[in-house]
Length: 141
Image 1 (spheres, rainbow, N blue to C red):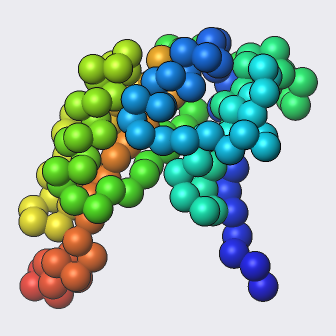
Image 2 (tube, rainbow, N blue to C red; image 1 turned 90 degrees about the vertical axis):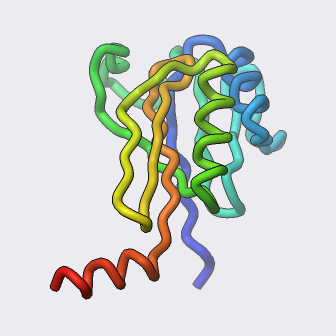
Image 3 (spheres, helix red, strand yellow; image 1 turned 90 degrees about the horizontal axis):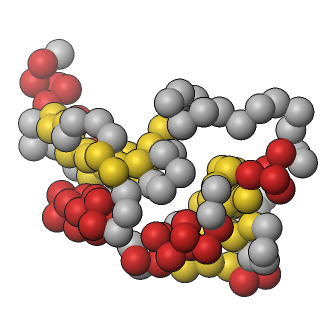
C-alpha cells in the first residue's frame, strides 16, 4: 500500500501574491502542478495545498466560495519546536498575514499560534511533545 496523501484545495484571490506569501515562509511549489490557475504548495512528501484562483476553484463546485467573514475549516500544521511555531507565525504576520486566534499553551506539552493568510484561511501552527502529553494524562488519570 502506498502512503496516503492529502491535497487541501483552497480558493485564492491573487495567486501570485499568495505564492509570494508562502515563499517568504520558506515553502516551495511543485512546478508540475503549478500554472496561472493553481499552485501546488508543498508541506511534505504527502501533504499539499492546492491554491486555486477563485475562478478555477469554482469550476470544481456548484457552491459559492465562503465569505472571508465565515470559517469552514482551520488547517493545522505541526512544527518541530516552540521556537519554530513562533518563527513561522511571526514570519507570516510580517509577510502580509494577519492574527487569527489566541496563543494556546497546554502545560509543557503543547503550544500553538495561528494566523490568517492573505485570503483569510486560518492556519494553526502546533508543537506537541507527545511523551510529556502522555505523562500529564497519566498523572491526571
